Image 1 (cartoon, one colour):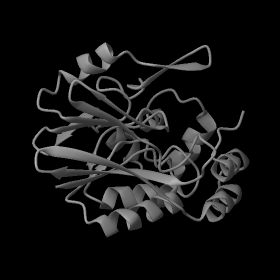
Image 2 (cartoon, helix red, strand yellow):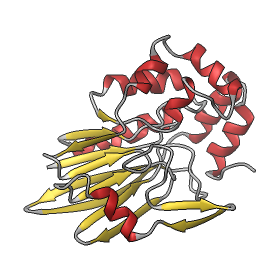
Image 3 (cartoon, helix red, strand yellow):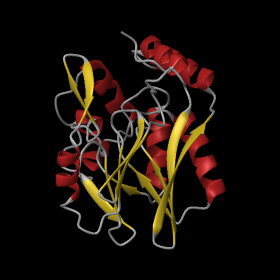
Image 4 (tube, helix red, strand yellow):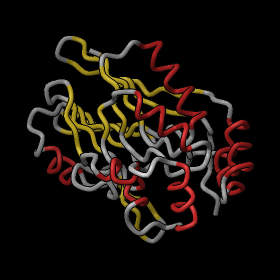
Length: 235
C-alpha cells in the first residue's frame, strides 16, 4: 500500500501542481492533505480548486481557520475571501482535526493530534524551538491505538522520530519553506509486509512564476514573493 501525503500548500498553485505530478508518478493508493490549503498568495483560487478536485483525505490546518476567525492579517483574509467561493471558509472549518487511513495504522493531523495550531514535534518559546517530550508525543498517539505511523505538518520542517515502535513524521511544506531551499515537499508511505517505510520527497517548481503571480495580484505580493524565492520567512 502507498500513501502520498502533502501539507501546507498555502495557496501556491505552482508548487502544488509540481508536487501532484511527482505524486502521480508514484501511483499512490491514497492521497492525504494535511491542511493550510489557501493562506498564501500564489494563485490561491487555483490551488483551492485543485485541492477540492483530488478526493484526498483532508484535515484542517490552523490557517484554514483564519477565514472564519481572527486572522494575523485582516488584509490577506479579506483578499482571500474575494478569491474563493463564498462557502470556502465554512468548508475549511468543517474539516476534521485528525483522520485515520490504512485501517487506522496511519494517523494524520496538521499540527498535533489535538490542535491544528499546536506543533507535535517542536515547541517555540521566546523565539527558540525545542523538541516536544517523547512522553507527550506518545500520550497523544495513544488516542489512536492502531497507529504505527503518525504524520503531521505545520512547522514546515521535515522530521522523523521513532518512539516505542511508532514512527512520527513531519511531512514538510509544499510552499513557504523555512530552510532556505525553495523546493516543494511531500512524503510517501509504503507498507511492505508489516513494515511502513517513509520517503521524503523534494520537487523543483517554477518559483519565479509563483513569485510574479503574487507580485501582480496580491496585496502583500512583495512579502510573498520574497518568501517563495528565498525559502526563508521574511523578518
